[in-house]
Figure 1: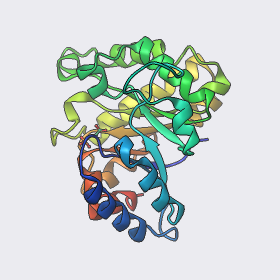
Figure 2: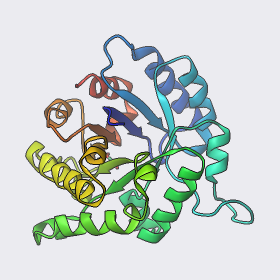
Figure 3: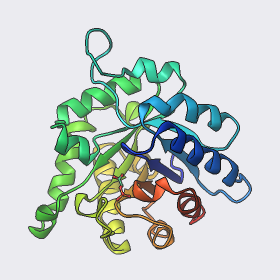
Length: 251
Ligand code: PGA
């Protein structure tokens, strides 16, 4: 079901102590009365349980940043969807551009990860986005269409209804160059039209599509005000309690 979501992706940052300090500030800082969105925090995996303990006393949900494409067994260093589900996680990021770039994750691996998550009732937060060179060539719509077709459109309509989408132009991630609100809106509307074409209008209207890439407390309101932008996937600005709380209040 379509809803507003602000998700924080802490990436590979913070010691346990620092992470606990941040999450305790967040847990105290969020107030159900003013929140018009769901908040999801995605810490590094060794902190998932600790953050989940704080979540129990607060209003946010917890997500993982990655999952194995395999079910279980001899895959040293990997974390399975079953493990994530056994600590009751609701969300997991998949297809982030950093995983595509530094760990060579392919569309088919991403698709397998999505299948594993859906097997255990975890909502994948599926990231797609073009690099600068692709935008400069004007092929950003083809790139997004291909990423979505190869990893998501293999799902049937019921399965797809569990997906949260995140459009993250790679040139905007961690660079301070946010997409203009009209660029975000244009791509989000395009993504919704692809979903309508592949499934139907109802499915498209029910899909949550987040924007990610240098979204911060100053620009969040302008981005979230667009019809097809249902919230944000926040990297750098999710590491500071005050900023992340301000972003969640931007609806
Ligand atoms: P950023 O990262 O907000 O630091 O640009 C966003 C993301 O990678 O999800």
